[in-house]
Length: 236
Image (cartoon, rainbow, N blue to C red; front, side, top):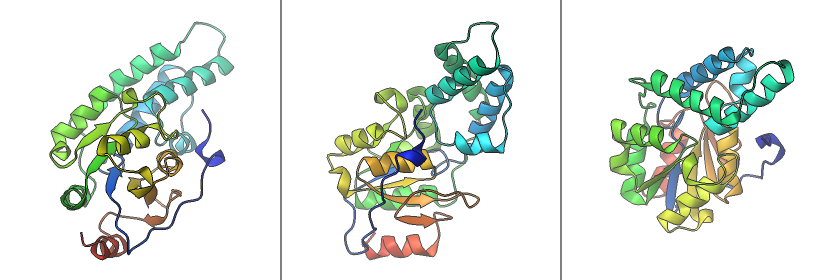
């Protein structure tokens, strides 16, 4: 998988005078506080296949899809172990099993997320673009009520390539009938932000614990004054 750091485009500026025509939200870490559960999934999968997993791995794999994590686990295991055959498909299937188990009852919304989605959806068409598989993303959308406030959501099963490729952001813009260059994306990972930027979107980056997110506006919370002022300048 190509590192997002190596393909990162320059973020366009946020224009407080010109409102976007649509908003596309990432899910995990932006709308729902599921990043810690996803890290637990990764740690468990690494352990199952005899691999070490630490803070650096968690940061590196943040925002990756199950398919990409499966490819990485398969690659690392091939480098360290000779016995047995491990395929990407088998690892991916195990990831989805563990993810379904660990996410049950653990999908609280990020502070300010639901109000932000409601506020945006009253002004412009909105969507969600996530590296989750279709089944898991459907559960996240419907069980949390987010589905009631967005027009569509795009999963990793809906496109040829997950983030950091731009495919799902381009698909979200297509479904919303909006030029990607007139869309705003809200992301919390380098992989996700790179995907949105490659699609031509303006990005608001949500930084957790000081993590760098390539973006036009970097915030540390969805209720921060700089974001609220921006929404007000757009008449939202």
